Length: 118
Image 1 (tube, rainbow, N blue to C red):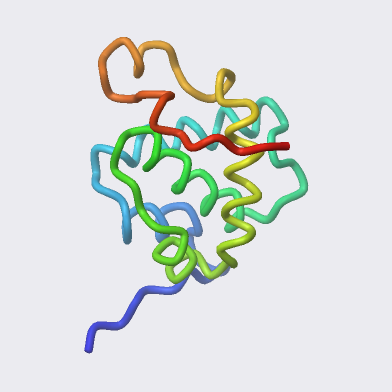
Image 2: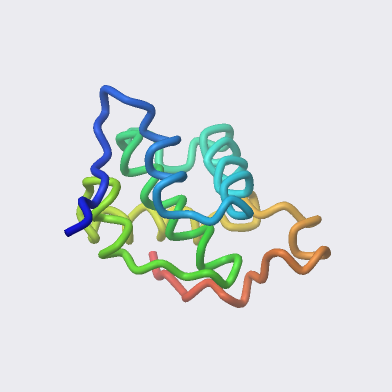
């Protein structure tokens, strides 16, 4: 039986989470979204693993490569509710996080993002 990798805060939280569940083509965009979120103070005060979990969920939906919150939770070690909460923060500020070039190039589609209410 394969062992599901767990995210350990003593290790590289971002690298472990991203590499273990995301296609390589998604990794750089997810990284850019995390950087932009930090620059804009989105989800400030949340733990790094919460930020990573929400960013993975947001990015996968944005790019049309959805992962369930359950799958992300199993790897990131944060609850599905926390992932959805961070996603809501990202959704509400999506215009600050999604580069126009991603949309123009057809990599990203804002219509893929389910509505998240305040």
